[in-house]
Image: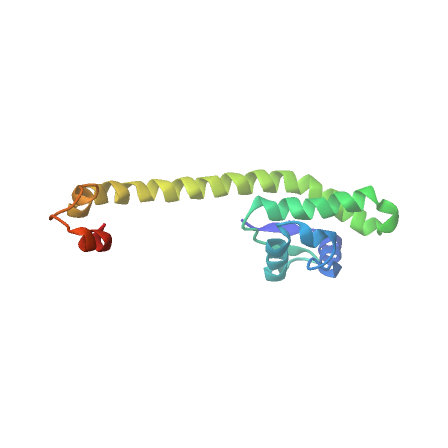
Length: 144
């Protein structure tokens, strides 16, 4: 799922160093930086990203909220971009969360038949039995 970051917010994030300072303490910072670096420019100055988790979207939202909280430190374009992001981020976060949950459910669903099939093989029948042949002390340490 692709998400578009408004141009002024994308520019603000590009100028922000996520490797030092308070932002670097957030566990989502490395993933956010990788996602932003892998993004591509869209129309105008927008940045199109493909986040791997909702934590990245929440990380960007925290920057947008900081811009709105400190409007006097930012340009009107950054303020508009932050407001636009926060309007979009709620929908994007819920959609991404639903997509990730569906993908995890499909992966779990695909793994279940393999696990059930393995239980009916010779290995599945022998696992759990004490030993196939009598073991002395040295062999027991090796084969136990």
